Image (tube, rainbow, N blue to C red; front, side, top):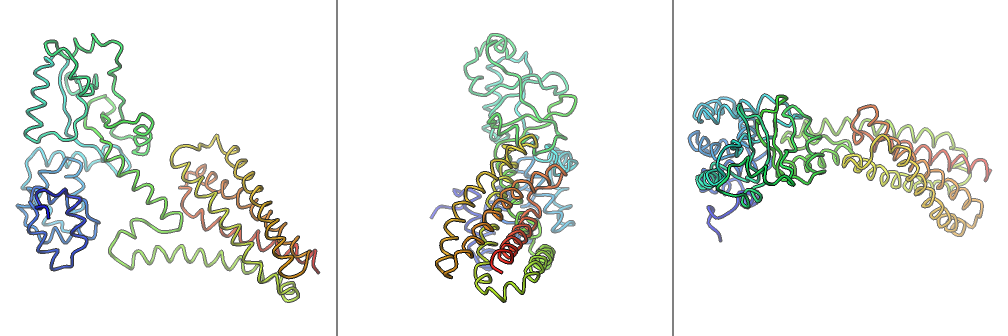
Length: 434
């Protein structure tokens, strides 16, 4: 087995998740203190408090010092939520520069790019000699003062961002010339940086990363002063969080409540949506009750009725999932609304016709009643058509109203497909069979 010092923090985190309480405490004490901060951030939130309680303030100070500035801030914020007094003690033990970085990053809200950036950047002035810049980079790298560095940021006075140079390009520069002389020599290369502002919405920054396939992006304030950088690993984490949140919202579950250890909070959030679902189920039942005489006369309708509702619900969920996901990825905009709805309606009609024929034949043979097959076939076409239309239309409408299209869409859609399915099936049966 590898020694702990040879293991990556994520490997250690995976091992910790498999241990019981006694083994967990024993293993924690063996983890090198310079990586325990990374390990804590790799673990689910419920383990964070266990680590904080078992590690002393001096060791925690060492662990935080080894983190990058954005991780330092995340660690301290979670630390403060768990034990504010101990967090204050540890914060006071940190170097003044680390304290300042944490305070600077904490001033941004969760939706601003600044809250995700690292303060550590590799910079140089345009007049500096290329050879000296490379040697300085090597020195900083050896002393572990820089990690995941891909670009050199060329600044003017007061950290005004001017150029952005990939380190691969830096290596082919003429080492005897200054940085700016080399930039002028490579006039066919575009060294202008793709930037984001520190108060810009993080979703916009994610879109820029994906559009230009970036590994890192400089973050500036509104005066173009370089204040930090965002790296691709942070972007991947954000995308993963957004996908998780979207998936939870689709079924009426609050992701923050689910991550919380408290059962009450998670149960309360689920109960709210289950209550809404109960109301919608009652609405569907009221529609069925309108045709109680029909159901008593033709018992076969009660057997076939769930099929109509189920097919409509599943078809609608397929459409809804595709549309919501494509909207999240930026593949669908408000201008694409008509095109998107048209496409989904055509798909729904095609599938409706196919399964209407299949189910119509099955029902006719099953109950030896041809008209019953006609009723369920027409009903299935109507319900799948409505599933396609509303499955695409609901999230587009919610987006236009500035509401997260994932929130509540499933509940609304299920209600519509159930009501339309039951109404069309039982209504047509009343007209045609009685």
